[in-house]
Image (spheres, rainbow, N blue to C red):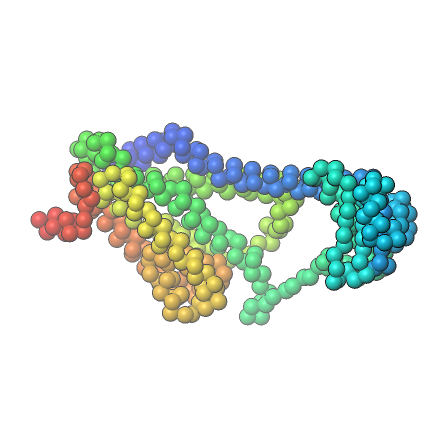
Length: 407
């Protein structure tokens, strides 16, 4: 127990050191900021597009029309002060000679031929006003010929309320996935944000040659445990910094940004699935934290350590190619292998748990394998660090690790 008496000191030092780095806050606040910027751009773009479309249809210009389809209502043409051109060629000549600003030709069959629009050039963006008015004439003419119910069908405005049942109980698939699915999203975000920090957490001291001084006062096990626990604390801080702004944006500006409305009070909360998701997330995070720390401890420089991060990313992101199989064929041997092999199991287990096709016995077996693998990986990270801390010129190989252990 005495060997771990400096654990709190290591945790405090690592957390404070990271919180003092501008890069941490840039990374921590960058994701919510990007979300806010993207939603802001979408919102203002939609607003500008809608306003521009309304202004285009309201702009006044002289017009001639030839309607061989007999769909356009004469009263609409009268309201616009449009002239009737006897033929397509005469209408085009009216535009060329400057008698009118625009000419619309509606062919006999709108399903087989295109509506032709000719107009006086008024600029790249303002030229679209002619097409907007041509479409408006068609829309208003057709709408006046159908009743409100038919109009709703044609405009795709009919709402459909679908109710699904699973095992005789009403089931809302999307809402059921929200809370368990958050663990999958958080896992990817944290690995993405802290993967490099996990990898380099043990390399920095080796590169600046302070590791000898540290190990004279702090036990290697306490040092590694402190670094890993500090990463977990920083990850919790990161989760808060990500979720709080996102939730606030959704609650305060969701309707304005046209975000799909979700009644948070009606989101199902299944304690079993949430508990399983939390356990899978926790042990998966510990496993990959231990793996990245172990890889970093075996490398002499951060540059060499970073080359291994791509291999780890393959294990993390690789299972995404089997998303369809995880949902459609959960009982296949391929899916079960990926769900139980520790380096690939986090994504299949969390995704299947969120979707609801992960049997409890398979979930418990997967969690047990992850837990054992995480503990073994953390112990391996400590062992690698103990033997590779003073190795500055080359990476620590498994052969060298076995030789040192036997000696």
